[in-house]
Length: 453
Image (tube, rainbow, N blue to C red; front, side):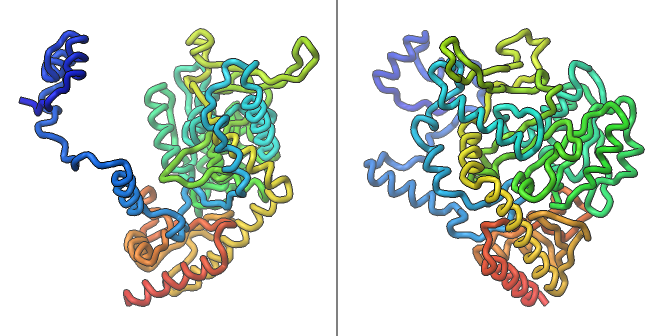
């Protein structure tokens, strides 16, 4: 018998209203399996007055580690950047936080304009022709790029570098299984995609080639050489970006022939928050605009000659015939897109460039200091942006555990997804790190290794 709590008069009335007498009757009627029913009362303390409850919850929350108390060098797809105070001040205003999808343009002009400006800025930093109103996150944005390339075909092949974020590749595998297209991974050579492997893998069935730049290891890919190989075929060249701050110093994907840019926009104005939220970026050449997923906001002139903003395209199954829909994406991350817009506007062109330069310089300073510690060596001899992989003398799990005791969050353990890189760590350094921060990490690593000898 399941545990059945005492019911109040109001609860009994609700049960009778749905045609049952007891909660047990309700569970039986709704076919809740016996084996998953609760057999005992919840282990909850007695009810507390509101001030006492608040004090209890605050005490529990203080057990969480956050970047106010820890120094973090963990990247691997999510990055810690300095946020100008104007960014949260504006995007946390009530009229933005509570707004929803701008289905009625006549009363949504503010949000529509903000999305329009977001699209414009994404086109500017990627040098692509058009960008949508955002997607869920980087992994689903990359999936949507693959689906655009596959189109209405029930088969086809997508080539993806093993240096693409492992979570993105896992998401791609799920969709490939569901949609029936083939996903093939390209081998690496010295931490970047092997050109020889790509050339031999390209076939007439290849619909897309997906390359992350900078890649998961922070290394810079041979993007122009890859473009020449891809465009010998009819395949689309997809560039995935997880650290768009790199576009402050690196050539834009449109400059080296990308057909689609898809990736993660978290580092442009959104703080780290226990794995989320995230912001999917998606930009394409003009000739793919009608196959682009999600929404596109446009600017027009109304019948009185005034400028106005509208949802120009919504090529999804809620609005058109299912068989003609390009995607099942049903929303956009409007609030985070607004944060990105405010962030990029606050930095400006020069500030965006300085952001990239600081990340680049500080990461290289950190790599030089860490690789000078006995037992530590750079895993790859390749140009990189603000992430770099290091081979360590101790297991990464052990190093990270001891770093946490010193209030430092260390690098990503590469052996989790790349077994061939045992005792290897991926460190991320951005403009948010000071010289003293980097020196503290180096001193901690020296101390840990020295103590282990």
